[in-house]
Length: 527
Image 1 (cartoon, rainbow, N blue to C red):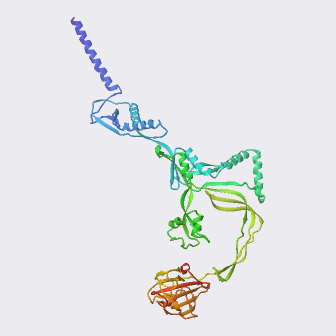
Image 2 (tube, rainbow, N blue to C red):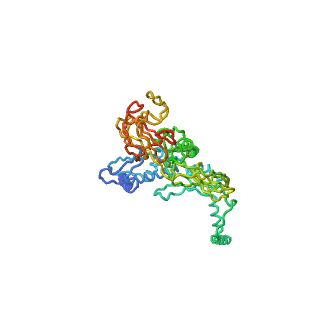
């Protein structure tokens, strides 16, 4: 019994030794446990969005795991996925520690990110036309929008829109290119012919044709129809990532881009224009035209050739410019023939021959911006019968100008009907009155010859001056006359002093301009 008991003890001791040995081997050689150096925190529990995802010895490894997890999440969608990703570590100091496999940590992070997705951004395209922008879901929608703009003018579907990289931009910005389907087909056909003997023959024929002088085209040789098409505004397209609510439906985008809207433009005044004609030509109420232009006070304001006025015209967000080759027949007027007369002023004209319309048939290139014609180039015309031109004799001398006869003063009575200010005064005022203190200098409105200087009944002291253009000016109610009949005076020369003589209610100057012996409103002629 003692021998058995002793043997049992030996076996027990051996078993314990083996168990201890195996435990030590497991501790030091299995991958899930590591012997740690005692240097402070030497093992870290990792949390992603407050969810534990693993234990590591080195926190720097975690960043690589998070990048890998994000890539996995992004691979589950074609769109841009945004998810919260807040990392946190809790360190501790241990002698032995169990760490997790990095692949397992990456998988855990991927699951946490899936549950933390904040929003998904759609890959989209932003179209910018001048200051207008619209966001669309795909390049197909962008092309459909642009195509809708040109389809209004391309009934035969001869042109199509393509997107190309903008070579003038450093960033990846797309712009538009309008291509002719017919030209592309002809280029492809020409390329095929070049590869064949027939193509070589055609190339030789073309070379010979270049040597031969070009023959004038007949009317039937012209193709007619749409010749060119392009956008009148710069279009930029950039890729972007947007939420659903930021996208515009294709139908609404087409309506916004193609419908006409009132846009401001500059109109240059041409000869013969009046404010009412400009308003009618641009389909604007006259009151609106006046309101848009600070330089115009009312419908009677003067405008000159070359003045620039703000007008509004109906235009879509994206304008289309095109050229059409057209055939038409029309009556036409010959250009006016002018005969210069150096003895006449430019205000004098005389018709020497009345015009008569002619008739012609024409082929022309007509340019448009949207619906408005912007130019016309006649390619061929045939006169059925000649127009007879209008012949006009006109003066070449610059007519004299007229200035206000006093400095300052307050206008007290205008030209035309009025209530008589005093007994003996006319109820139809034939000039303009400016109130001014007695003794104010009165100047010649324009150069001329004094016709009368002295007392003039109701005028009191008065001066009449005849001018080279046949007009006459009169200056009344003066206190003193400083010129004599027959005297030549210059524009701005002092001719009298203001006063209160004749039929007058106070110190002032009465001023008239007569044309053909009849008084006109002086304010219409003063510079």
